[in-house]
Structures are given as structure tokens and as C-alpha cells.
Amino acid sequence: GDSKSAVETWRAGNRFSQDLARGGPVIHALVASAMLMDELHALANYAGPGKLAEAQREELYVAVKAMPEDGFDWGVSWGVETAMAEEWLGKLRTMDDPSGYYKGIGMPVPKGVPPSEQDVEKYSEFMLAAQVALREPPDKAKPLLEDLESRERKLSQVLQLRIVDPVKCNEARGKVAEAREHLLQVLSAK
Image (tube, rainbow, N blue to C red; front, side, top):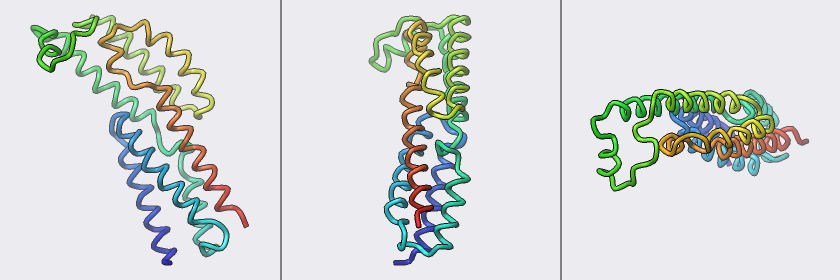
């Protein structure tokens, strides 16, 4: 019954999902996108015509319109993911017994351990290409990311294990973009 508080709560939730995605690896962006989807869907159900004061609907419309289409900059999360993996791969390259790490955690030693410097460079190039694609709108990123799948299959197993599926990330982005667009339509309906 307190629509002003509801709007402020939504805005706080939106800021929280933005903050969660900012500066973290891809898993943070995926969790933040799920939270944001819940917020967008709940608000779309709550903000229909006659349910909020016109001033609040306009305030929300401006806030939602100002959001990035897919919620936040997924490329930043992809860059953090890349930096973390590059650091790990560097450590793996310099370990006295890198296979011992995998045996110690009860995992079979993946092919490509230890990775060569050239392997790490190929990994970095792949991740940069995915990061660039994820800065495009979801529909434009889709074919770019699908083309990258063949490049991913050419990487060694140890590198592939460090890659979050960029196509799935793009699908999550697309769902956020759809929910955002639906909410904008609800907020602009008279």
C-alpha cells in the first residue's frame, strides 16, 4: 500500500544488483542479473496503470530508461574473470608439480597442464574477444559469441575449464534486456 516506499525499495535493489556486478567476476554478474530480473518482473507486475501515482511511474520510467539495456557492463565482469584466470594460469605454469594440485583436490589432471605461455596468450585473446562481444547489444553479440565457440574448442582442456560459457552469459543479458523493455512498456502505458 505504500507505493513511495515500494519505488525506493526497488531503486535500492537495482543499485545493489549494479554494485554486485561491478568489479567482480562473471559469477557476480550472473547472480546480479538474476536479482535484477526478479526486481524487473516484480515491478512490472506492481507498476501497471492505476497502481502507482503518475509521478512515481515517471520517476521509475526515467530510472529504468537510464539503465544499460542488459542491466550493467558485462564486459567489466568478463575482464575481471580474465585477470583472475590469467593470474591462476601464471601460478600453474610456475608450480613445481602443477599436476599435484589437481590430484590434491581429487580431480583428474586436465590436458594442457602446465599451460605454455602461448596457451595463456590464446586464452587471453579468446577472453578479450568475448569481452568485446559482450559489450555489444545481446542480439548483435550472439553471432560473435557463437563464432567464438569454435575457437574455444581449439584451446587446451585446462584453459577451457577456466571459461564461463559466453553464450549463456549473453542469454542472461538478453533476458534482462527483455524484462527491462517490458517494464518500460508497462510504465509508459496509460
